Length: 363
Ligand code: ATP
Image (tube, rainbow, N blue to C red; front, top):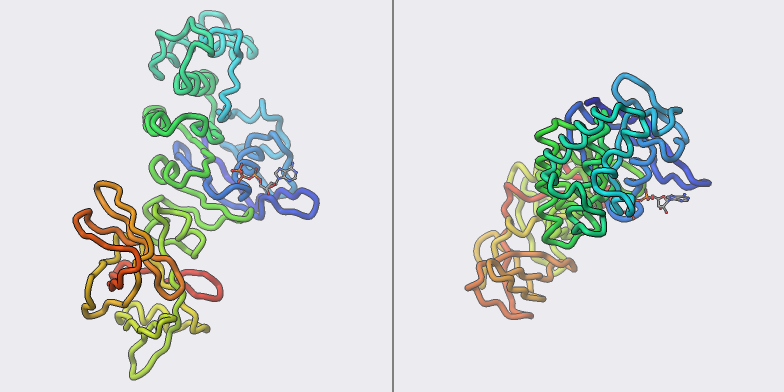
Protein backbone atom coordinates (compact mmCIF):
# COMPACT_ATOMS: atom_id res chain seq x y z
CA UNK A 1 0.00 0.00 0.00
CA UNK A 2 1.04 3.61 -0.36
CA UNK A 3 0.37 7.06 0.98
CA UNK A 4 -1.31 9.78 -1.06
CA UNK A 5 -0.44 13.46 -0.85
CA UNK A 6 -2.52 16.25 -2.34
CA UNK A 7 -0.66 19.53 -2.42
CA UNK A 8 -2.40 22.81 -3.27
CA UNK A 9 -4.70 20.91 -5.60
CA UNK A 10 -6.86 23.08 -7.85
CA UNK A 11 -9.40 22.20 -10.52
CA UNK A 12 -11.19 25.00 -12.35
CA UNK A 13 -13.95 24.85 -14.93
CA UNK A 14 -13.93 28.20 -16.70
CA UNK A 15 -13.65 30.65 -13.81
CA UNK A 16 -15.23 28.24 -11.31
CA UNK A 17 -13.03 26.48 -8.76
CA UNK A 18 -14.53 23.02 -8.23
CA UNK A 19 -11.50 22.09 -6.08
CA UNK A 20 -9.89 25.07 -4.39
CA UNK A 21 -6.38 24.61 -3.08
CA UNK A 22 -6.85 21.32 -1.27
CA UNK A 23 -3.87 19.91 0.62
CA UNK A 24 -3.95 16.71 2.65
CA UNK A 25 -2.00 13.52 3.31
CA UNK A 26 -3.55 10.07 3.41
CA UNK A 27 -1.11 7.88 5.30
CA UNK A 28 -0.22 4.38 4.19
CA UNK A 29 -3.03 2.01 5.20
CA UNK A 30 -5.41 4.79 6.20
CA UNK A 31 -9.11 4.97 5.33
CA UNK A 32 -9.99 8.56 4.48
CA UNK A 33 -13.51 9.72 3.64
CA UNK A 34 -14.05 12.80 1.49
CA UNK A 35 -17.38 14.06 2.72
CA UNK A 36 -19.59 17.06 2.06
CA UNK A 37 -22.83 18.17 0.45
CA UNK A 38 -23.66 17.77 -3.23
CA UNK A 39 -21.37 19.85 -5.43
CA UNK A 40 -18.66 20.40 -2.79
CA UNK A 41 -15.96 18.93 -5.03
CA UNK A 42 -15.39 15.50 -3.51
CA UNK A 43 -15.91 13.46 -6.68
CA UNK A 44 -13.78 15.91 -8.65
CA UNK A 45 -11.01 15.49 -6.07
CA UNK A 46 -11.21 11.69 -6.33
CA UNK A 47 -11.22 11.84 -10.12
CA UNK A 48 -8.13 14.04 -10.04
CA UNK A 49 -6.35 11.44 -7.90
CA UNK A 50 -7.50 8.72 -10.29
CA UNK A 51 -6.31 10.69 -13.30
CA UNK A 52 -9.75 10.65 -14.92
CA UNK A 53 -9.60 14.44 -15.29
CA UNK A 54 -6.51 16.66 -15.57
CA UNK A 55 -5.53 18.92 -12.69
CA UNK A 56 -5.38 22.70 -13.12
CA UNK A 57 -2.51 23.13 -10.65
CA UNK A 58 -0.93 21.53 -7.61
CA UNK A 59 0.56 18.08 -7.11
CA UNK A 60 -0.68 14.56 -6.50
CA UNK A 61 1.75 12.07 -5.02
CA UNK A 62 0.99 8.34 -4.77
CA UNK A 63 3.69 6.35 -3.00
CA UNK A 64 6.95 7.95 -3.98
CA UNK A 65 5.85 9.28 -7.38
CA UNK A 66 4.30 12.55 -8.51
CA UNK A 67 1.51 11.22 -10.73
CA UNK A 68 0.16 14.52 -12.13
CA UNK A 69 0.80 13.56 -15.72
CA UNK A 70 0.39 9.78 -15.53
CA UNK A 71 -2.51 7.93 -17.16
CA UNK A 72 -4.98 6.29 -14.75
CA UNK A 73 -3.66 2.84 -15.65
CA UNK A 74 -0.15 3.84 -14.60
CA UNK A 75 -1.13 5.24 -11.20
CA UNK A 76 -1.42 1.90 -9.40
CA UNK A 77 -4.95 2.61 -8.22
CA UNK A 78 -8.22 0.69 -8.41
CA UNK A 79 -11.61 2.38 -8.46
CA UNK A 80 -14.96 1.21 -7.15
CA UNK A 81 -17.96 3.16 -8.43
CA UNK A 82 -21.54 3.37 -7.24
CA UNK A 83 -22.88 1.73 -10.41
CA UNK A 84 -20.48 -1.25 -9.99
CA UNK A 85 -19.62 -1.13 -13.74
CA UNK A 86 -19.68 -4.94 -14.07
CA UNK A 87 -19.69 -6.72 -17.45
CA UNK A 88 -23.25 -8.11 -17.67
CA UNK A 89 -22.42 -10.99 -20.05
CA UNK A 90 -19.46 -12.28 -18.03
CA UNK A 91 -19.61 -14.53 -14.98
CA UNK A 92 -18.36 -13.21 -11.67
CA UNK A 93 -15.17 -15.23 -12.21
CA UNK A 94 -14.61 -13.58 -15.60
CA UNK A 95 -15.46 -10.13 -14.24
CA UNK A 96 -12.71 -10.59 -11.65
CA UNK A 97 -10.27 -12.16 -14.09
CA UNK A 98 -10.72 -9.58 -16.85
CA UNK A 99 -8.47 -6.79 -15.52
CA UNK A 100 -5.73 -9.38 -14.94
CA UNK A 101 -6.07 -10.81 -18.45
CA UNK A 102 -5.68 -7.26 -19.74
CA UNK A 103 -2.42 -7.12 -17.84
CA UNK A 104 -1.44 -10.41 -19.50
CA UNK A 105 -0.87 -12.31 -16.28
CA UNK A 106 -0.37 -16.09 -16.58
CA UNK A 107 -3.61 -18.07 -16.36
CA UNK A 108 -2.72 -19.95 -13.14
CA UNK A 109 -1.77 -16.69 -11.40
CA UNK A 110 -5.07 -15.14 -12.46
CA UNK A 111 -6.92 -18.18 -11.12
CA UNK A 112 -5.11 -17.90 -7.79
CA UNK A 113 -5.84 -14.19 -7.40
CA UNK A 114 -9.51 -14.52 -8.38
CA UNK A 115 -10.06 -17.35 -5.92
CA UNK A 116 -8.26 -15.49 -3.16
CA UNK A 117 -10.38 -12.35 -3.72
CA UNK A 118 -13.53 -14.50 -3.76
CA UNK A 119 -12.47 -16.07 -0.48
CA UNK A 120 -11.70 -12.70 1.17
CA UNK A 121 -15.07 -11.32 0.09
CA UNK A 122 -16.98 -14.53 0.82
CA UNK A 123 -18.29 -15.04 -2.70
CA UNK A 124 -16.66 -18.28 -3.81
CA UNK A 125 -20.13 -19.76 -4.29
CA UNK A 126 -21.07 -16.94 -6.66
CA UNK A 127 -18.18 -17.24 -9.12
CA UNK A 128 -20.18 -18.88 -11.92
CA UNK A 129 -23.15 -16.50 -11.72
CA UNK A 130 -23.81 -13.56 -14.01
CA UNK A 131 -24.25 -10.08 -12.43
CA UNK A 132 -28.02 -10.10 -13.06
CA UNK A 133 -28.28 -13.22 -10.89
CA UNK A 134 -26.83 -11.33 -7.91
CA UNK A 135 -28.33 -9.00 -5.33
CA UNK A 136 -27.19 -5.36 -5.18
CA UNK A 137 -24.91 -6.12 -2.23
CA UNK A 138 -23.37 -9.12 -4.01
CA UNK A 139 -22.78 -7.03 -7.13
CA UNK A 140 -21.05 -4.42 -5.00
CA UNK A 141 -18.87 -7.16 -3.52
CA UNK A 142 -17.87 -8.23 -7.05
CA UNK A 143 -16.94 -4.63 -7.82
CA UNK A 144 -14.78 -4.60 -4.67
CA UNK A 145 -13.28 -7.95 -5.70
CA UNK A 146 -12.38 -6.61 -9.10
CA UNK A 147 -10.50 -3.78 -7.44
CA UNK A 148 -8.89 -6.19 -5.00
CA UNK A 149 -7.44 -8.61 -7.58
CA UNK A 150 -5.46 -5.77 -9.07
CA UNK A 151 -3.59 -5.42 -5.80
CA UNK A 152 -3.37 -1.63 -6.17
CA UNK A 153 -1.40 0.80 -4.03
CA UNK A 154 -4.60 2.74 -3.32
CA UNK A 155 -8.32 2.02 -3.52
CA UNK A 156 -10.50 4.91 -4.67
CA UNK A 157 -14.21 4.50 -3.95
CA UNK A 158 -16.94 6.84 -5.16
CA UNK A 159 -20.20 6.46 -3.21
CA UNK A 160 -19.97 2.65 -3.54
CA UNK A 161 -23.01 2.04 -1.33
CA UNK A 162 -25.43 4.65 -2.56
CA UNK A 163 -27.39 2.27 -4.82
CA UNK A 164 -28.13 -0.14 -1.99
CA UNK A 165 -31.17 -0.05 0.25
CA UNK A 166 -30.72 1.27 3.79
CA UNK A 167 -30.33 -2.13 5.48
CA UNK A 168 -27.84 -3.48 2.97
CA UNK A 169 -25.90 -0.24 3.12
CA UNK A 170 -25.35 -0.71 6.84
CA UNK A 171 -24.22 -4.31 6.25
CA UNK A 172 -21.85 -3.41 3.41
CA UNK A 173 -20.52 -0.55 5.50
CA UNK A 174 -19.15 -3.02 8.01
CA UNK A 175 -17.91 -5.30 5.21
CA UNK A 176 -15.88 -2.51 3.64
CA UNK A 177 -14.58 -1.54 7.06
CA UNK A 178 -13.53 -5.15 7.61
CA UNK A 179 -11.98 -5.24 4.14
CA UNK A 180 -9.89 -2.23 5.13
CA UNK A 181 -8.84 -3.71 8.47
CA UNK A 182 -7.90 -7.09 7.01
CA UNK A 183 -5.93 -5.70 4.08
CA UNK A 184 -4.54 -2.60 5.79
CA UNK A 185 -5.50 -0.93 2.54
CA UNK A 186 -5.10 2.75 1.73
CA UNK A 187 -8.61 3.86 0.82
CA UNK A 188 -9.96 7.22 -0.31
CA UNK A 189 -13.72 7.04 -0.12
CA UNK A 190 -16.23 9.63 -1.34
CA UNK A 191 -19.60 9.93 0.35
CA UNK A 192 -22.20 12.60 0.97
CA UNK A 193 -23.40 10.60 3.97
CA UNK A 194 -21.71 11.92 7.09
CA UNK A 195 -22.74 8.85 9.07
CA UNK A 196 -20.94 6.58 6.59
CA UNK A 197 -17.83 8.71 6.93
CA UNK A 198 -17.98 8.87 10.72
CA UNK A 199 -18.49 5.12 11.13
CA UNK A 200 -15.94 3.87 8.60
CA UNK A 201 -13.07 6.29 8.22
CA UNK A 202 -9.86 6.83 10.18
CA UNK A 203 -9.98 10.43 9.04
CA UNK A 204 -12.52 12.55 7.30
CA UNK A 205 -11.92 15.44 4.95
CA UNK A 206 -14.97 17.68 5.20
CA UNK A 207 -15.39 19.79 2.06
CA UNK A 208 -17.66 22.68 1.15
CA UNK A 209 -17.60 24.86 -1.94
CA UNK A 210 -14.39 23.23 -3.22
CA UNK A 211 -12.56 24.08 0.02
CA UNK A 212 -11.27 21.63 2.59
CA UNK A 213 -12.93 22.71 5.83
CA UNK A 214 -11.45 20.24 8.30
CA UNK A 215 -9.29 17.12 8.09
CA UNK A 216 -9.15 14.99 11.20
CA UNK A 217 -10.45 11.84 12.90
CA UNK A 218 -14.24 11.58 13.08
CA UNK A 219 -14.09 11.85 16.89
CA UNK A 220 -12.07 15.03 16.69
CA UNK A 221 -14.28 16.56 13.97
CA UNK A 222 -17.35 15.70 16.02
CA UNK A 223 -15.95 17.09 19.27
CA UNK A 224 -14.13 20.11 17.85
CA UNK A 225 -15.69 21.32 14.60
CA UNK A 226 -13.64 24.23 13.32
CA UNK A 227 -16.58 26.23 11.99
CA UNK A 228 -20.36 26.34 11.82
CA UNK A 229 -20.51 24.48 8.51
CA UNK A 230 -18.66 21.45 9.89
CA UNK A 231 -20.63 21.66 13.14
CA UNK A 232 -23.95 21.46 11.35
CA UNK A 233 -22.87 18.88 8.75
CA UNK A 234 -21.49 16.24 11.12
CA UNK A 235 -23.87 14.57 13.58
CA UNK A 236 -27.52 13.64 13.42
CA UNK A 237 -29.73 15.35 14.34
CA UNK A 238 -27.64 18.35 13.40
CA UNK A 239 -26.01 20.52 16.04
CA UNK A 240 -28.33 23.40 16.90
CA UNK A 241 -26.86 26.83 16.21
CA UNK A 242 -28.41 29.68 18.16
CA UNK A 243 -27.52 33.30 17.32
CA UNK A 244 -26.97 35.34 20.50
CA UNK A 245 -25.31 38.52 21.66
CA UNK A 246 -22.38 38.57 24.05
CA UNK A 247 -21.76 41.25 26.64
CA UNK A 248 -19.56 41.61 29.68
CA UNK A 249 -20.50 43.39 32.90
CA UNK A 250 -18.88 43.23 36.35
CA UNK A 251 -16.43 40.64 35.04
CA UNK A 252 -19.20 38.25 33.95
CA UNK A 253 -19.88 37.41 30.32
CA UNK A 254 -23.46 36.72 29.37
CA UNK A 255 -25.14 35.65 26.14
CA UNK A 256 -28.49 37.30 25.48
CA UNK A 257 -31.23 35.75 23.36
CA UNK A 258 -33.64 37.58 21.09
CA UNK A 259 -36.38 37.08 23.73
CA UNK A 260 -34.31 39.06 26.26
CA UNK A 261 -33.17 36.18 28.51
CA UNK A 262 -29.51 35.88 29.38
CA UNK A 263 -27.16 33.04 30.13
CA UNK A 264 -23.99 33.52 32.13
CA UNK A 265 -20.99 31.78 30.62
CA UNK A 266 -18.64 29.64 32.70
CA UNK A 267 -15.19 31.22 33.20
CA UNK A 268 -13.70 28.90 30.55
CA UNK A 269 -16.32 29.79 27.96
CA UNK A 270 -16.12 33.47 28.87
CA UNK A 271 -12.38 33.32 28.23
CA UNK A 272 -13.00 31.82 24.78
CA UNK A 273 -15.12 34.74 23.62
CA UNK A 274 -13.08 37.39 25.44
CA UNK A 275 -10.94 38.19 22.41
CA UNK A 276 -13.88 38.44 20.02
CA UNK A 277 -14.10 41.48 17.80
CA UNK A 278 -17.85 41.02 17.48
CA UNK A 279 -20.70 40.81 19.94
CA UNK A 280 -22.42 38.27 17.71
CA UNK A 281 -21.83 34.82 19.16
CA UNK A 282 -23.48 31.61 17.99
CA UNK A 283 -24.07 28.95 20.60
CA UNK A 284 -23.78 25.40 19.22
CA UNK A 285 -25.21 22.47 21.14
CA UNK A 286 -25.83 18.82 20.27
CA UNK A 287 -29.15 17.34 21.32
CA UNK A 288 -27.56 15.05 23.90
CA UNK A 289 -25.96 18.00 25.73
CA UNK A 290 -29.18 19.94 26.37
CA UNK A 291 -31.52 19.17 29.26
CA UNK A 292 -35.19 19.94 28.85
CA UNK A 293 -37.13 21.10 31.92
CA UNK A 294 -40.84 21.71 32.37
CA UNK A 295 -40.17 24.54 34.79
CA UNK A 296 -37.36 27.04 35.20
CA UNK A 297 -34.18 25.85 36.94
CA UNK A 298 -31.01 27.84 37.62
CA UNK A 299 -29.03 28.36 34.43
CA UNK A 300 -31.89 27.36 32.11
CA UNK A 301 -33.42 29.58 29.43
CA UNK A 302 -37.07 29.75 28.34
CA UNK A 303 -38.04 28.22 24.99
CA UNK A 304 -41.12 26.89 23.26
CA UNK A 305 -41.67 23.34 21.98
CA UNK A 306 -42.32 23.40 18.25
CA UNK A 307 -42.55 19.78 17.10
CA UNK A 308 -42.39 16.56 19.07
CA UNK A 309 -41.19 13.38 17.33
CA UNK A 310 -41.37 10.13 19.31
CA UNK A 311 -39.06 7.47 17.81
CA UNK A 312 -39.61 4.71 20.37
CA UNK A 313 -36.32 4.81 22.28
CA UNK A 314 -36.16 8.53 22.51
CA UNK A 315 -38.34 11.52 21.70
CA UNK A 316 -36.89 14.38 19.69
CA UNK A 317 -38.24 17.80 20.54
CA UNK A 318 -37.58 20.73 18.29
CA UNK A 319 -37.82 23.94 20.25
CA UNK A 320 -37.79 27.58 19.19
CA UNK A 321 -35.14 29.71 20.84
CA UNK A 322 -33.82 33.09 19.77
CA UNK A 323 -35.10 32.55 16.24
CA UNK A 324 -33.38 29.16 15.88
CA UNK A 325 -34.64 25.61 15.98
CA UNK A 326 -33.03 23.64 18.79
CA UNK A 327 -32.99 19.82 18.76
CA UNK A 328 -33.33 18.20 22.16
CA UNK A 329 -33.80 14.53 23.02
CA UNK A 330 -35.86 13.39 25.99
CA UNK A 331 -36.84 9.98 27.36
CA UNK A 332 -40.06 8.64 25.76
CA UNK A 333 -42.03 8.85 29.02
CA UNK A 334 -41.79 12.65 29.18
CA UNK A 335 -44.87 14.13 27.53
CA UNK A 336 -44.30 17.42 25.74
CA UNK A 337 -46.95 19.16 23.66
CA UNK A 338 -46.26 21.41 20.70
CA UNK A 339 -46.28 25.10 21.77
CA UNK A 340 -45.65 24.16 25.41
CA UNK A 341 -43.38 26.50 27.37
CA UNK A 342 -40.18 24.64 28.29
CA UNK A 343 -36.74 25.52 29.69
CA UNK A 344 -33.45 24.44 28.20
CA UNK A 345 -30.26 23.91 30.14
CA UNK A 346 -27.03 23.82 28.14
CA UNK A 347 -24.03 21.81 29.30
CA UNK A 348 -21.30 24.47 29.50
CA UNK A 349 -18.57 21.85 29.28
CA UNK A 350 -19.83 20.56 25.95
CA UNK A 351 -21.22 23.67 24.29
CA UNK A 352 -19.60 25.18 21.21
CA UNK A 353 -19.17 28.90 20.63
CA UNK A 354 -18.73 30.42 17.20
CA UNK A 355 -17.92 33.93 15.99
CA UNK A 356 -21.19 35.15 14.46
CA UNK A 357 -19.30 37.12 11.78
CA UNK A 358 -16.63 34.68 10.61
CA UNK A 359 -18.54 31.52 11.62
CA UNK A 360 -15.27 30.11 13.03
CA UNK A 361 -15.18 28.29 16.37
CA UNK A 362 -13.72 30.11 19.37
CA UNK A 363 -10.96 27.75 20.53
P1 ATP B 1 -22.13 15.07 -5.70
O1 ATP B 1 -22.24 14.48 -4.33
O2 ATP B 1 -23.41 15.72 -6.13
O3 ATP B 1 -21.56 14.14 -6.71
P2 ATP B 1 -19.55 16.38 -5.47
O4 ATP B 1 -19.18 16.96 -4.16
O5 ATP B 1 -18.95 15.09 -5.82
O6 ATP B 1 -21.13 16.33 -5.58
P3 ATP B 1 -18.36 17.36 -7.85
O7 ATP B 1 -18.98 16.37 -8.77
O8 ATP B 1 -16.95 17.17 -7.49
O9 ATP B 1 -19.22 17.49 -6.53
O10 ATP B 1 -18.55 18.81 -8.48
C1 ATP B 1 -18.04 19.98 -7.86
C2 ATP B 1 -18.49 21.17 -8.64
O11 ATP B 1 -17.86 21.20 -9.92
C3 ATP B 1 -19.98 21.21 -8.90
O12 ATP B 1 -20.43 22.53 -8.73
C4 ATP B 1 -20.11 20.76 -10.33
O13 ATP B 1 -21.24 21.33 -10.94
C5 ATP B 1 -18.81 21.29 -10.94
N1 ATP B 1 -18.37 20.44 -12.05
C6 ATP B 1 -18.03 19.13 -11.99
N2 ATP B 1 -17.66 18.67 -13.20
C7 ATP B 1 -17.77 19.72 -14.07
C8 ATP B 1 -17.52 19.89 -15.47
N3 ATP B 1 -17.08 18.88 -16.23
N4 ATP B 1 -17.75 21.11 -16.00
C9 ATP B 1 -18.17 22.14 -15.23
N5 ATP B 1 -18.41 22.04 -13.91
C10 ATP B 1 -18.21 20.85 -13.32
